[in-house]
Image 1: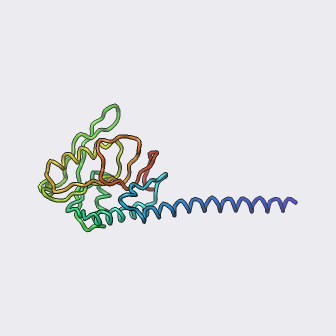
Image 2 (image 1 turned 180 degrees about the vertical axis):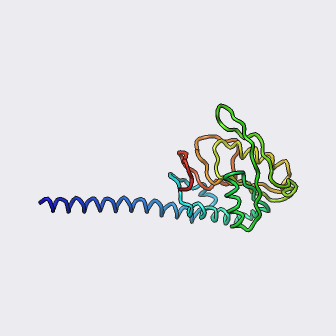
Image 3 (image 1 turned 180 degrees about the horizontal axis):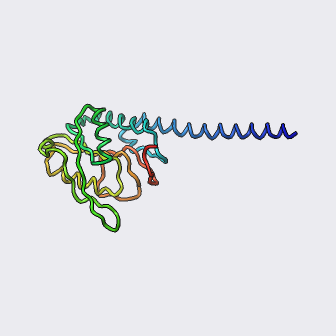
Length: 194
């Protein structure tokens, strides 16, 4: 009798584990499908937890294709230091475009860092009359992106577009609205990539 009960119990437990695993795999599959089928109208892609590097990189490949479909091929991709630098380098490699970086200077207000200046790590004359894509890895208040966009506009590029890989909170109003947001979550995630 005990053996029968244990067999039924472990069989049911195994079935339950398989069912839960299947649900997680289905959620991962559906997210991958959303990324693969992304269009400008379906962006940003809503996520509820950190994603794999493969999904992040596939998202960059998709946004690169969407930019090309819009006939926006930047002459330069500018990454906002630190996190945006990595994104700019990866997009530059995907699109075979040069990338540049911009440092931002912060000061503290109520124990929170606030961006107050952007310092280009290149000769600013490079982007005069050029198409520029400014990228950052994340967006919270939009202050950093706003400062960088303002400073870049003063250099009179032909066209500026902006891309943020991850918007941390959809309920906040931001100081700058990026042209493209790849991923978004309703609740802030500690890390985008797991």
